[in-house]
Amino acid sequence: MIQNKNILQDPFGRQHTYLRISLTELCNLRCTYCMPAEGIQLSPRSHIMNYDEVYTIAKTFVDHGVTKIRLTGGEPLVRRDADVILKKLATLPVELSITSNAVIIDRFIDILKECNIKNINVSLDSLDAEKFKEITRRNDFEKVYKNIMLLIDEGFYVKLNAVLINGFNDNEIIDFIELTKELPVSVRFIEFMPFDGNKWDKAKMVSYAQVMEYVNANYDDGKVIRLKDAPNDTSKNYKIEGYKGSFAIISSVTNPFCDSCNRIRLTANGRLKNCLFSSSESDLLTPLREGKSIEPMIQKAIQAKFKVRGGMDTMEKLEQPDLHGNNRSMIAIGG
Ligand code: SAM
Ligand code: SF4
Image (tube, rainbow, N blue to C red):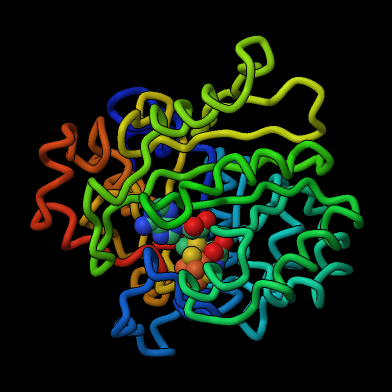
C-alpha cells in the first residue's frame, strides 16, 4: 500500500527525476578500473530484462516524475535489440541520452537521430593509442577517435569521460583540455572510484584539487573561467577563454554531490540501486514478472537512500574495502 504518492522523493527531500538504465553487463572493452581482470559473474540470460520489461519499468518511473533517462551498461550498444529499446524509450516524454565507449556507435547514427538523442557521453581515458590499449585491454583507439569525430560532425553534443589514474594518464590532463580549443566538446575528468575488484587505492586517484593544480600551472589566471553548473550537475565546469569546448571535474570521491542527487539506477537484471555506492539493491523484475505492482518496491528503495554515498560519508569509510567490496563492479551497475 503506497502511503505517499510522491514515491520518488526520499526522506531528505531529494526528488529523483533522472534514471540511468543499464542495458547489459556485456562489453566490447575491458577497462581495468571497471571490469576485474577475471571478468564478472554474468547474470543468467533469463534474468536480464527484455525490451518490454525495460520499457514497462521505465514508463512506471516516468509516470512518477522521471524526466531524464540515460542508457548505459556495460556497453549499451552491444545489446542485439539496442535499436528496439532506443525506439521504444523514445516514445516516452523524457530526455533520452546514452553513455557509450563509441566502438560501434557509427552503426547507430540514424537511430540516435531518429530517437532525438542529442547528448552522448563517450569514455576516452587516453589520447595515446598504446595507453588506450593498456587501460581498455583492446586495440580500438583509432575506431573510437574516428567515431567521436563522426558524432561531432553529425551534430551531437559530446562529453568525453576520462577516469584519471595517478601515474597513468594524469600527464594528459592538459592535452585533453587542449582538445577543447578547436572541438566543441566537454572533457570530464572523473575521480577514480572504488568498486568490487578494481583494486582501488586512494593513491591512484587524481583529485579535483590535483586537476586544478595542473590547470593553474599551465594557464594564466584570467584564462580559466568557472562556468555555471546546471542544477543537479555532478560536475564542476570550466573553460579556457576563447576555446570552443569546456572541461569539468566529477569529484564523487573528494567532493560528493549527494545533497542535490536526483539519480537512481536500474541494473540490466532489473534491480534498482538508490545510489552508485549502495551495496543493497531492490529487485523490480521479479514482482513485475509475477504481475505485481513495482511501485511499493520503488518507494521502499527510495526511502532507504542514505544521505551521503551509500552511507560511506567519510573518506575513512570509503577506504574500507569491506564497505564497498559488496558493491558490484561498475560494469554491472551501469555508470
Ligand atoms: N561502456 C560505456 C562507457 O564506457 O562509456 C558505458 C558504461 S561505463 C560503466 C560508464 C562510465 O563509468 C564510464 O564513463 C566509465 O569511465 C565510468 N567508470 C567505470 N568504472 C569507474 C570507476 N571505477 N571510477 C570512475 N568511473 C568509472
Ligand atoms: Fe566497458 Fe565502459 Fe566499463 Fe570500459 S568503462 S569496460 S567500456 S562498460
